[in-house]
Length: 202
Image (cartoon, rainbow, N blue to C red; front, side, top):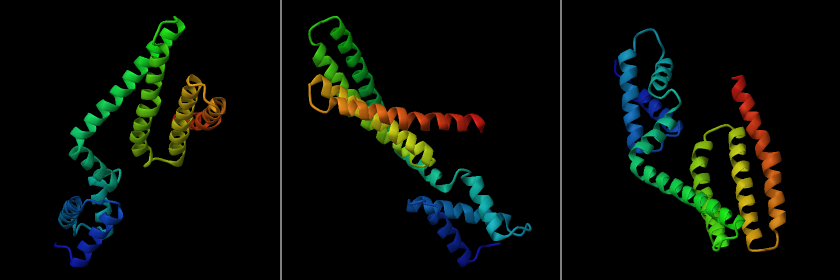
């Protein structure tokens, strides 16, 4: 049985309301859902029931996630390159920082240059890139997950900047260190252990 114009319009509005923004994907989803409903129509179920079942079969976690996966596949090569670059910067920064600290302890030359370079790469380049990448994931999660993410990255970033201030003997280093430690201890850690507890009970 073919759907009426009103029913097709209802399916389209449902898909659009679900947050699917790509017009081509909207049309593909609507066509698929209409075909499924038409083949299942007449089996004792209402139009709304058939629509909900068709959506759940197509996208159990929501149509928006289906769009996100589609976008990921369309941009997978670019995303992979960006992730490789991001983690390479993080690795190089951590490596240089480790060597710089070792040189500092052994009183070798270039210790300060290596330490500062590593800190800049790690905290001012890698951490913001990682925060942006993780935020895209956390934005679709619960408020607890979002707060854990925001407080965790904020505290690490502030502590990293305070260490840089210490190296350059700039004013405010101690204040930033205390602020970062406070956010980490009384902001990030409670949310971290609360989510760990909640996950262990589920």
